[in-house]
Length: 146
Image (cartoon, rainbow, N blue to C red; front, side, top):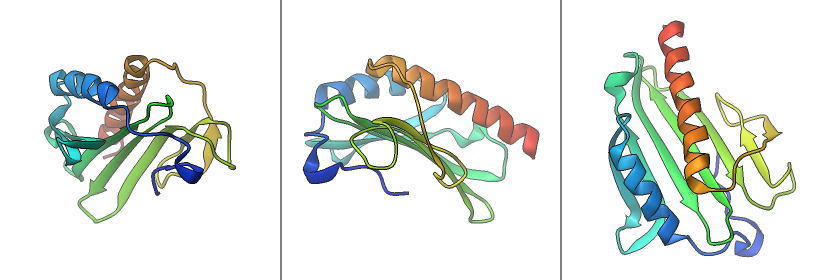
């Protein structure tokens, strides 16, 4: 599943202030092991949160959340898991112009398809809360599935 970029860069430039705000909250979240900006701290495009897999069942050996936030208010929050058997589980919350759904939509797990329209708050911290509630439910589901 490729993260959105929007036609002709319509999402706008990265919103560095919002990415730093979210990084501060991620750094304090007990699920987050570490955060970093990619490609680096001087060029903030993606905020990557590596999650603490000690809180997951053993079959999940890696989990992360990649956040892109743009000055237009568009965003992408993509959650990815890698399993011990080399399979993946992923989903993504998006707001960006597109031809497949409404501006705000959700790419369903386990592979990011199908895509459904979604209603999300517009404030970054409220969106963050919605996503982390979903991650908590995912972890609970993974434990019950094992």
